[in-house]
Image 1 (cartoon, one colour):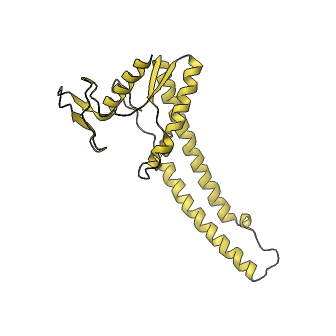
Image 2: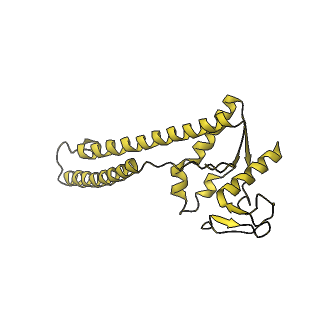
Image 3: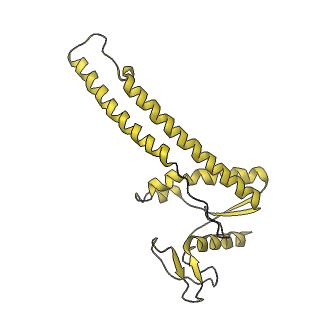
Length: 194
């Protein structure tokens, strides 16, 4: 989250747990494969009392470990999002966010994993219910052209690739951080709707 006053909240990261979840996911799939092979061999030999997949303890242990780390990541992410949304709702009476369409954004397979990992939809849902609970105003605006328009002079400076993080306005010569400029424009659009 980036605020119009220039403050930036770090994105959520749980490197250790994510690495452990990956390791246990790999172990789980290998052990599942071995269990399926063994189960198939027993079936081919017509062994009495052949084991089902749920009878293989190593696969079960790996699955439990993987699920434990995935659950820990989810809990840490929710805690982080609760802290940010609590802080925003307590500090501001009017909160303006972009009305992003997560389904459309995840069509870009380069960004999809990152977007889903950050739980943008969950962040928006938390803001919505906390604003209702505390009597604050939440406004959603269309984010179109917010990073292109100069927040000082209001002129459209043209499309820029995502790699351009800072730029100078050719009209008023103001220097902008791409994300802070977009957040100011989103705030201005939202306040215009009041």
